[in-house]
Length: 425
Ligand code: AMP
Ligand code: GLY
Image 1 (cartoon, rainbow, N blue to C red):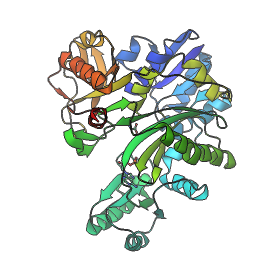
Image 2: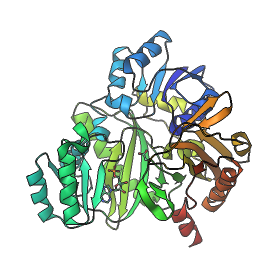
Image 3: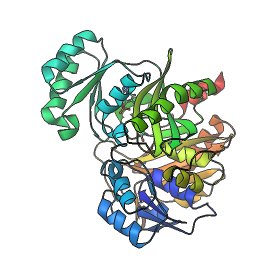
């Protein structure tokens, strides 16, 4: 099979790494890819948002399957355009990608299908939004409806802050993404990310992972795309998984069928595990980054038949197995991230780290120059390690991090603290 993988971050490097192991693979292309992906795939200089360019490439190279990493091309209709060209696509149509692209759409769907989630209201008028605050108590959760690169959620501790946020968002802070807002009840609990493959009808549950969204130790500092991850997630017990499948994932897949927009690809549920059970925080129409990387490392067997089956309505009867070993991932980021940071600093000894037993290094924001490997983004490298316990995997990952010579980088020193605390008990 010839595959075109779309994207160029750590998530896509781990997907390329897994796909490259498939005995069914003939050629693997990746657009635009990155230097790490370039070692195992043919990288193609097409931006991941260049829908027409991607369709043209897939058509002229007669690829058998397109696997889409990020959400932007999906929201822009890449899967729809590929369907017109008769090329299977792992990733939802534009209509189905609304599960990520519109928070209000998901909240209404939850209401209509009795899916447990936070109580909410949708607003376009500031005075109505402010009046709704009377019905809620602090902290107030205020969200821009559309895609806002992970920055569209504000948890306001006070009424004043909540009102200011409403005016900022509806006043155009996020452009079109904030023309409508959702205000919701604050849910207490522990967060986990759960993933399931679906062809629109059948569902193949994957596993859960947890990430660390804040930039600094102790879950302090600004939100990021994720500073580390691990799997398994001890909070996500078998009983919780059964409830998530029955109460959240299955009704969602059914709802999308009813709406005439069956969801194809991976459904990523951001969940709050509360005292009343699991509740949906949000959906993403793609794998998580960095959660995907730990999933790929823990997955046994061939991923390619599963991706193809999901893309072609053939998922029924498939299964997947996972290594019992834990996987931990540390993000090495450029100093300053998620704020301002420099590009171009030299990174050394990545190969030495990657050669350590149980370790794989995935590239996220790197560039290969005549001088060697340099930083080219905020999140730059993902260091992953497997081990019989979470503690072992985490320790190994940090030893590999220490091997890498990059003074301009930083990482959190406490990735997996929840996991370690639970293993102690
Ligand atoms: P989202 O982009 O919807 O995942 O929100 C970003 C983060 O905000 C989530 O990962 C949670 O930590 C937090 N969050 C969002 N909605 C809620 C909620 N209703 N209650 C508590 N925390 C929330
Ligand atoms: N790590 C969270 C995300 O990919 O959205």
